[in-house]
Amino acid sequence: MSHADRWRIVPGVRPDLVAIDPAGTDGAPGNKSATGEETATLAERLADLQGRLWAESERSLLVVLQAMDAGGKDGTVKRVFRAMNPMGIQATSFKAPNDTELAHDFLWRIHAALPERGKVGIFNRSHYEDVLVVRVEELVPEPVWRPRYEAIRAFERMLTTEGTTVVKVFLHISREEQAERFRARLADPTKNWKFAAGDLDVRARWDDYRDAYADAMEQTSTATAPWFVVPADHKWYRNWAVSRILVDVLDAMDPRYPAPAEGLDRIVID
Ligand code: ATP
Ligand code: MG
Image 1: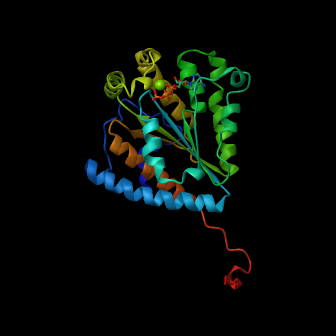
Image 2: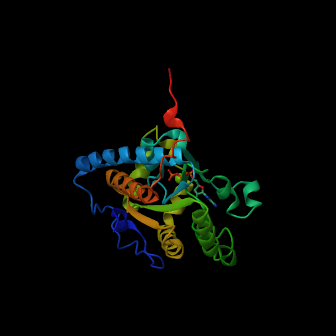
Image 3: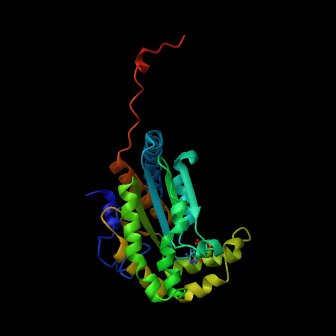
């Protein structure tokens, strides 16, 4: 059993998001400061593993981050991925699709943003919005969004066999924690820009979004492209848990430095 199994959604099982405590700290090595120290140690391992993935240049890793508003997606990118070499990272955030994107299938813009071989791709929101916000806000009818679960499974299966490991993380915050973070966005002039009035309409449909998330995870957590539910009210726990998951996944990928070119050992530099 790997460390990350604690947060993994078993294929076909609907996660009970009401039963998973967003403030939970299960498995943490200690309090905030002790856990932060282990996160720093994990960061060194992440740097080494990413360096090897980059040098190998044969496979890639895609990390999908999803959460309710203010769930900590940006913070996770900032805190966890800064351990890695920016040259080997490709981060994309997905907003509401523009006209060109809407003129194509929902995976078109996703495909174009995938990490090339050797890179770690980060998706801040993703194709999952097309079975989340699109479903809850009824942007398309059910006969359109329902078949997307199967399309996503097939798409991610294809990515996996073509050399992209896919990992999906749901940052699980409580409604109360979201209220706190919204208040901070309103009170702090440096955070005002993060608040959109429409966020409150989405917040009002909290339970619908939670159900849509549970369905999406039940439908699309697979052995090769698993979902992880990370309690995220405590940022220090979230950072540690996501680091832990990434180290486990990259360790399993076991990227290798390429073999030296023939005759390298006979070259003399004078
Ligand atoms: P934060 O969590 O900090 O609020 P954010 O990810 O919400 O950041 P925003 O720029 O505030 O970033 O919002 C992006 C918006 O784009 C979200 O409301 C999301 O629902 C919407 N969006 C993303 N993909 C789609 C999609 N396929 N269809 C419709 N809306 C989408
Ligand atoms: Mg937002």
